[in-house]
Image (tube, rainbow, N blue to C red; front, side, top):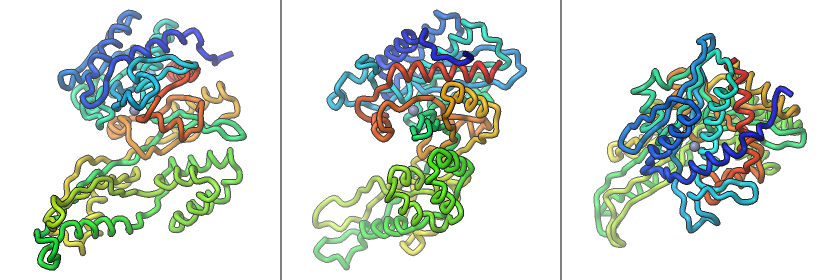
Amino acid sequence: MPTQILNTVKQEVTQLLRELIRIDTTNPPGNETQAATYLAHYLASVGFKTEVIESAPGRGSLITRLKGTGEKPSLLLLSHLDVVAADPNEWTVDPFAGTIKDGYVYGRGAIDMKSMTASEVLVMELLKKNNVKLKGDVVLAATADEEQGGEEGAGYLLKHYREKIWCPYVINEGGGLAVPTEKGNVFTVQTAEKGILWLKIKAKGTPGHGSTPNTADNAIMRIYKVIDKLENYQPETMYIATLKQYLAEIAKYNPELNEPFARLLANPKQSEQILDELAKKDRALAEEIRPRTKMTITPTMIHGGVKENIIPSECDVVFDCRILPGQNVVKTIDLIKGLLKDVGLEKLTFEFIQMHDGSESSTKTPLYSTIKTVLREFEPNCGVTPELATGGTDSRFFREEGSICYGFQPMIPDEPIDQLNKRMHGIDERITIENLVYGTSILYETVKRFMS
Ligand SMILES: [Zn+2]
């Protein structure tokens, strides 16, 4: 048997995850140094030299490296140490206790993404222990700040310590979950992410008394027009390579989708109607595909007015706009301003809260082939598909610097995928110990195979 489930690491990887969950790295403020230091001690105990680098006090990231012969390009095993907040009152267990119950490890970060940190550490340990002859360096980085954009973590390290962290290949979070079908599991590999443009648009007017509306210039009404214009805008449909491959792979496992997917691809201008039709049969699938075919722009916050009888002179709205890889934030800003011309641009101000382009890695690489081969050895009938994420991860920093990045934490869903997804950043986040061992086993085999 070339591939096997590594049951021998079960204790270690489970314990490592529990210890990481017990170190509260809720971001903000993060306090990742404590977790980075814990990992440094752990790795030192199994023979690794490590470094903890802080971007600011308490904001530590851990880096270690296994040297190869240099015959192959290096590979980075990336993860983030910070987590989003958890309200203990909403959970059935303490989110920071690392509780084991019914075969699960519970806790904030159990999936996103301390489990993958634990797996990656185990992979490093096994490569060393088993004396795997590496042809390229394998680097491990467990970083700060991903949940707040990553500028204090992966972004900082790439800017200031590029020689320590940059690799041509990166494995990170964001994919790996199997989608069960009647013909077998289809595993996702995150190869692309949408870009982000968070913008606040503020309208200026002139105040007045609520009883005499014609004497004032109501800022709320101007913002109403802004929302109306952007809500009625029909963004152009674009099919990126990742989406086309995703549709093809899903259809292989669900032949009844061949026809609607072929129509969708052939008729980008009718994409909304075709997806509406598909939604009648499979709403989850249609709504999975829809935001991946175009940019989206959604109002998420609004502020205006101070008193019942005062017409406000100021009102603002925040939009969460997500653009496809290949689209560009600067052009998108121009486009939005163009749409708002007749609302009165001179009375609007724009603030850009966060902005960066989307990113995409090709699947025509030796690492993608290795992932596919290894998965098929573990699961002979499985499919493997690239996936475009609507949200972002630290992979974007590396793709901007030319790395091939894949989000890949192999996992078999233990409950319906929409329920499982709700736990990430939600209540009672958990992972089965079985999946923890499964993910570690596949990751180890992939790295070993790719680097030797
Ligand atoms: Zn994450």
